[in-house]
Image (cartoon, rainbow, N blue to C red; front, side):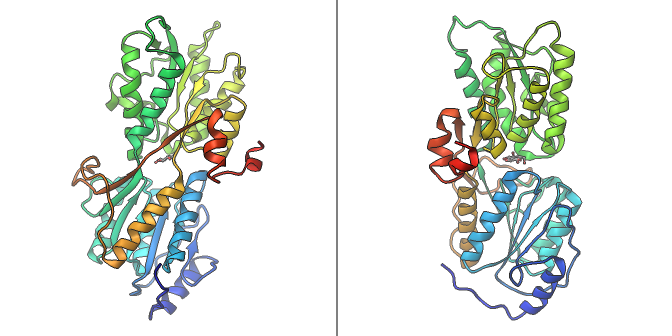
Length: 381
Ligand code: BGC
């Protein structure tokens, strides 16, 4: 563990941090949603790590931000943690603040990676190391490392779960089953990987006729996923899209059998729409997939409104990124385990990939609870 180093210029940074927001330590600033901190004067501190998260409106990013912040502080670093309310401009100005505050490393979970080129150029000109967190940042050479869960595998787990549940590989299973696919936010690079992973599994069954798509929203190829993407990953948009599909294409007794949802925030909206349309868990409720093991969704799994979630233990991602930060700061070799997959359009970014995991109602206890991710009390079990 590193010892805490006092930085000569801390006073300037501390003054800045205090002016940004109420905070608990000299340069530890955690902003609230919508808080758009203004730029600051430069300092030359060497142990400051900036953590830029997309939003506090989704449970996972709060957990990600808090955990990484804790680890880095335990390692003796100062931190700035900011959440950008899903607004790319706000994220740019927050990163600008971190650069001006003298950050040595920036850990960024981008809202729209393509908007960050200019600010990252500025960071690179000041020798700041950039780690893309969870989401790759495209179209820039100024991203040094990437740490994430295997995004393609997330989609594969969702697709394989559906195939297994419906026993689609059994020649006796002919269906056809009504499938409604959704995809994530078109500006999020991960969404493409999630969809490709799932569609590589599911599309053959669309082609063979075991699946039909009453709404006609089954993309002809993996590249067409953006047409079913839900901008900003919002629950409300997913809900209204599902309501539209149900109202328009499921009249006269037709029922949806499967909803491919890439994550839990969308699944929640889809489940609300199913509720509103009179579907009953255990009777005619369709298979609904998800990702993130958000509390509300895990609770829905317990009452059979969601079939599975792909759990990405954000603590392990935080652990890995804190390790990479420390390796960068101490001049050690930075641990990566994939140097081929993640081409950001300019270069292949050295990546550390973590394995995602399927969780179903039957494994909530043995995974989420036993690992301490949730207490049984929290989940009401
Ligand atoms: C993350 C998912 C998350 C989604 C919405 C993606 O980039 O990998 O875990 O559900 O963003 O925030």
